[in-house]
Image (cartoon, rainbow, N blue to C red; front, top):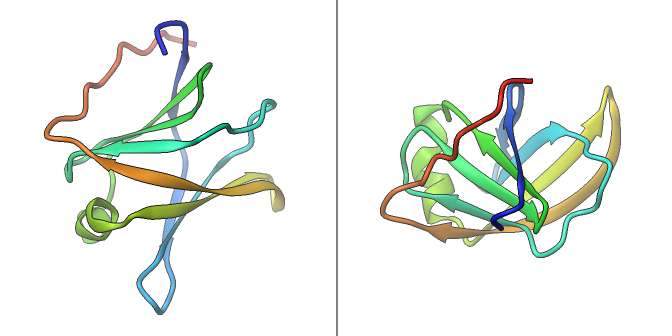
Length: 107
């Protein structure tokens, strides 16, 4: 993961279905996911490792979803372009004692 491109997801949505399961909607990327994992410590930020080349920082998670996200085994990730769904997949949640926030290069 040393060569991963780090991106800050500036606009994303987190939804909860009636069963309490979470869905995260992000902007679609060109490349596909491979063994996606979310590293999360229960705080404001989470890291979505889509594949070996792409790390996405999910900033300022709403306090009402933090416990559900931390305790989830996985969440559904939906990548969309406008109103079109490009791909969807499950990302495993890896609990961490502290999310190691990476340096984000200015775009």
